[in-house]
Image (cartoon, rainbow, N blue to C red; front, side, top):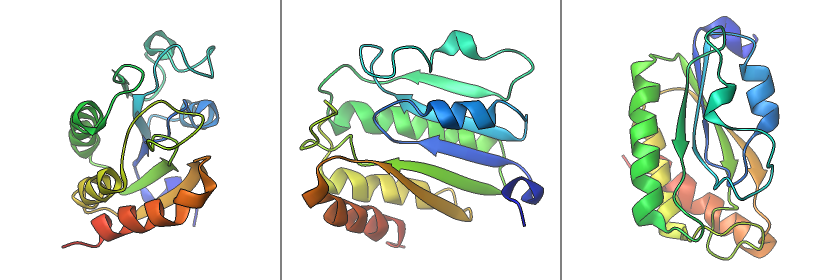
Length: 160
C-alpha cells in the first residue's frame, strides 16, 4: 500500500540540512504537511527551503527558522515542539521522520550542539504524536556516533 493511500502524512525533517528532495515530492499534494526546524540560511543548500517557496496551491508547510549557527538543545527543542503541535493539528494518519544526526554536536558538517540525550527527548516528542511512524535515516557524518545516537532516539520513542 502506498503511504498516501493511508490518508494525510506529516513529514518532520530533523536533519540539519534542508530536504530539497522531500520538498519536491511533498509539494505535489495537499495531503502532506512538511515541517522542519530549518537549518540556518547560511548553510547548504543555499537555493531551497525558504518560506516564500510555499504557494497557496502547495501543501501547508510551517517554516520555522532554526536557531542560529551553533545552537544547542535549549533553542532547537522548543522549535521542534511547536512544529510537532502544528503537525498534530493537521491530523495525519502517519508520520515520516527525515532523520538526520548531523545536528549532533560532534558532526563535522553541522553546527548544532545536540547530544545523545537530546535525541532521546526528540524520540519522546515524536512518540507523543502516537502515529504509525517511518524513520528515514538521511544525514549524520560522525559515523562513529550514529549507532549510539539512533539508540538514544529509539530509547526515547519507546519510553512509555
